[in-house]
Amino acid sequence: MATEKSKAKIVDAFLGLLSEKPYAGIGLGDIAARAGLTLGELRSAYDGKLAILADFIRQVDSAVLDSTEAPSAEESRRDRLFDLIMKRLDQMAPHRAAVRHLAESARRDPGMALCLNRIALDSARFMLAGAGISTDGLRGAARTQGFVLMAARIVPVWLQDEDPDLSKTMAAVDRALEHAETWSHRTDRAAGILCRVGRKLDRHRPKRAAKPETEAPAA
Image (cartoon, rainbow, N blue to C red; front, side, top):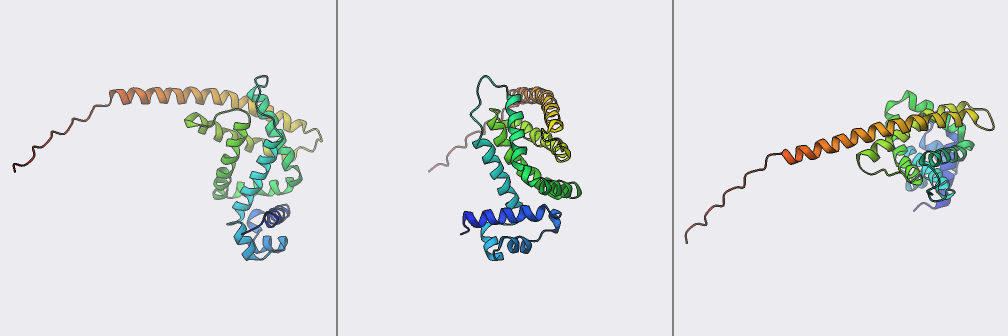
C-alpha cells in the first residue's frame, strides 16, 4: 500500500517533469526515477499519469475549499465564484509551466482533452458547491460543464499575465462570470421548458390496458 509520502513524491515528480516537457513525452519510468521510487511502488500508488494529475487537482480543490468560509447571505454567488477561481489560480501559480504544457498537449490531443474534461467536472462540482450553487439534475449538469468551459477561457489569459496584480486575469474572470450568468439564465429556462414538456407528455401518455386474468384450470 502506497504511503502519503510516496504519493507526494510522485505528484511532485510528475509536475516537475510536466514543467519541462509535454505530457506525451513523460513516461511512467521517468516519473518513478524522478521520485526515487520503483515502478512497482508507482503502480501501487496510481494507475497512470491521469490518476496522478487527478490527485493534484484534488489537492488544489482541498486547499481552496479549506481556506474558504461557508457561503453567507451577504455575498453574491458571482462574488463567491470570483474568489474561488482566484484562489485556485494562486494555488496553481508555482506550477504555471506545468499547466502551460498540459494546456498545449490538450489542444493537440482531443482524446486527452476529453479525459481532462472528466477530471475538471469533478473539480467543478466542488467549486460550485463552495459557492453555494447546486449541481443536481439537468440544470446542475449544465452549470458544471459551463464552469469547466469558463475556466478553459480564463487559464490562457492567466498563463500570459505577467502583472503581479493579475489585472488581466481578474478582468477575464469578471467577463467570464458575466457571460456565465447570462448563459446560466438561458439554460435554466431551457431546462424548465424541457421538464414541463416532459410532465405534459407523461400525463398524456396512453395507459396500457390491463391484461385479462386467465381462469384457473379446473381441478
